[in-house]
Length: 131
Image (cartoon, rainbow, N blue to C red; front, side):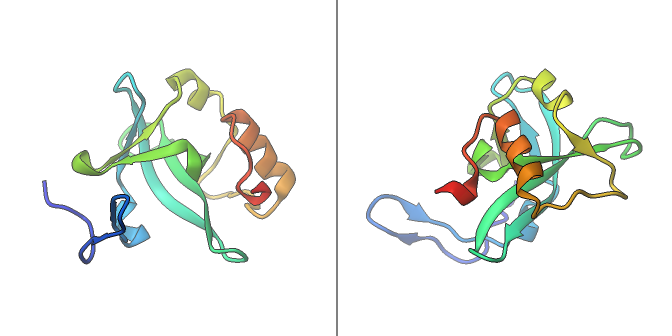
């Protein structure tokens, strides 16, 4: 499997820093600790006010891309498994199925903190804007 990384990593003293294009992560699969397929990364949402990665938008369900439901997942809930080029989301498949989702033609207002708080709470994460 070819790597999607762009450029070389540089040693930081505590590990290797790799910087990649967000676009290279689109389409990466997402799995849980049990190895269940939880979908694919469709988009990575940035908070342009502070430069944070806020959410990954996952597609999940449907058949051959039809009827997929989209879910916003807090970025901090995901771990990139670099060697296998997929993300790990440490949740049961049922938690994702019960997550607030949205239709590909009707996206929520990602800047709405009330909506965002609900997403963060669902995954048990502290909102990135409350650092």
